Length: 83
Image 1 (cartoon, rainbow, N blue to C red):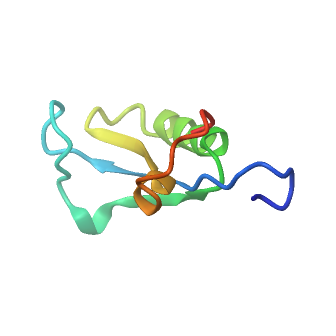
Image 2: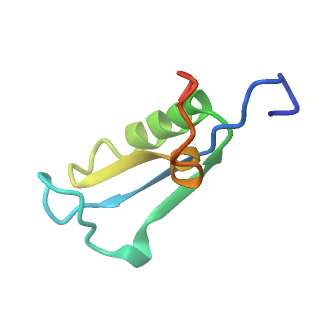
């Protein structure tokens, strides 16, 4: 549980980088990936994702992603609808 509001902690990772091809998800340079951060819920991760995506709007090959870490950490656990 999150200490602040009692809601479950559903970790999300936000990261991005330049793609080799716009139709795929292979990155040009793994050393240049931008690890934005890890967030306790989807809403805060989405806010960070949106800000970074808007910052990079001039680079068509730059993409940012939200990864549901809680699903990777506990794959057998049913989602709560908040992820």
